[in-house]
Image (tube, rainbow, N blue to C red; front, side, top):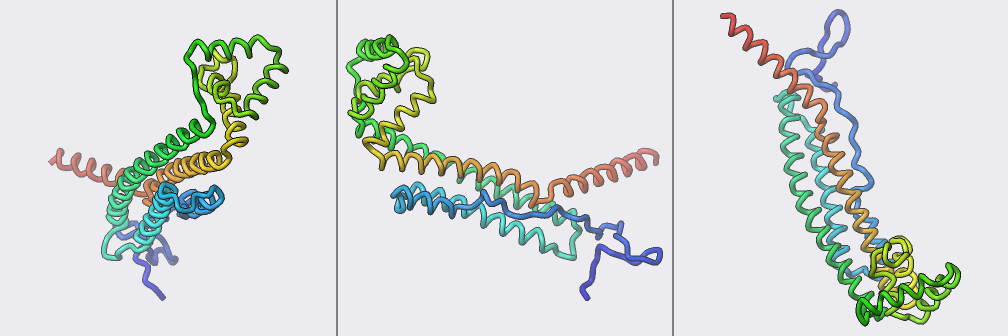
Amino acid sequence: MSYRPDLEYRGGRIAQKTDAHARKPLPEFTIPERINGAFLDTIARESGMADDTTLKGTRDTLASWRQSFEQLSKVRNAQDPAVTQAAHLNQLAKLTDAALTRMSGQFDRARAGLNLKREALQGEAIERLGLTTRGQAAEAEIRSALLSMSAEARQKAISEAIQRGDGEVIYALTNASPLVSGISAENQGTIMRRALLAHAPDVLRKQEAIDKAQSRLNDGYTAALDAADVVSAKAVADSYRRESQSAAAARAELEGQA
């Protein structure tokens, strides 16, 4: 039978100690599933980017965060019986803060890498679709002609431009403010996606893979920030700090009366 320094026999029954060796219950902790890089391996394979270093780096970042929480959880559950729970949680908080600092830097680097990759793919999309312009006047002329059509005729003209890969028309529609083009930002994105699907589906798959990786990275980081408060038992640690402050105030009041 293991010894429980947080319990004592009092009043004919087992009770929680109220001295410095007592331990308060800690919130249950499990590592959030969002902190997992394995999902990115599937994304990379399906998009033909299995060897892409940017996606691999993002996967490794999420895997590193998961490992950090596994280590913090082990420390959390291995309190030295020679120290109080308050001291144990204080040390755990320092380790958690250090881990979050590392994660913040890793997040910034991974996000920057994904943004650069997305920009490179956008450049490839522009090249593959032949998106060109003969100047703002020519763009305005194209948009004016389309806006003068009925909605049905305009949709038909846009679809035909997409199918024949008319880069000049696609550029005029997707490279202007919705207020100018008469086409919402959502529909501009749809036009670009349809053009890529018709003429550069491989680039579209890669763009969508990077977008998914960015979403996964953001979700993972948000989950990590939330998980940090749980693994460190911040609420319990805060209660000890408040009790310590109350004790200090009581001592100061007594000393002031002396």
